[in-house]
Length: 276
Image (cartoon, rainbow, N blue to C red; front, side, top):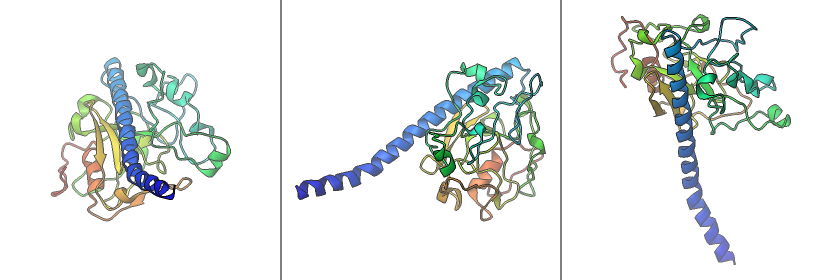
C-alpha cells in the first residue's frame, strides 16, 4: 500500500505541472477569442459611426441619464467592496457600454478566466469574482482619457490621441492594440495609459497566461504576447495590493514593446535598438 501511495504521489507530481500548463493555454485561447469578438464589435461600431472608435474615459466615468457621452465600457475595478466590481450592467447595458449591442449582450467578454483573484474583504462578501479584466487603449477613441497621465517616454517619441480608424498611421492598424487583459492589481477604469517614461509602466498589462498577455489589434487580429523583460515576467498577483506606476530598469524590452504599439505622431522615429 505504501508503495502504491508513493507511486501515485510521483505521478501526481509529474502530471500537475502539465495540467497547469494545459489549463493556462485553455484560458489564453478563451481570452483571445473574447478579445477578437470585442475587436469585431469595435469594427461594427466604427462602421455605424463615421469611422470613429468607441469613446474611452478615465476615472470610472458613468454617463448621466440622457448624456451624449457613451464609453466603450464603464465602471471602476479595485479591491474594495464597491458595487462596480460586480455590476454586470456596466458591461452589458448599452447605456453604459457602447460595444454591448454588437455582441448581443449575452456574454461577459470582458473577463479573463485566469483572473480569479479577490481581496479578503471581497471574499468576506461571498463574491466569486470581479466582472472585468479587459482594458482599452487610452489613446484610441474620443473622450476624456487624453487628459490623464500622459507623457512621452523617449526623446524620439510623441504620443498621439486618435479618434478615427483612418488616423492609424504610426503605427498602422496591425500594430495598434485596442483591448487587452490588464494585470489584476492594476485594472481600475477602462482606460489603459502607456508608459510615460523609460523606467515606468503607468498601467500594467496582464501576465496571467504563463507570463504572457493577450491583445487585440485595430486590424482585428489577436495576439498572445510573452513578456521577456526583468519586471513583467516576474510579476505576481497579491490580492489587495495595487500595482501601478511600476518601476522597471531602463531598456526594458516589454516597456518598449508597448510604446511601439501605441499611437504616435507621424514625425516619431522610435529609438534605435527598440525593435519588435
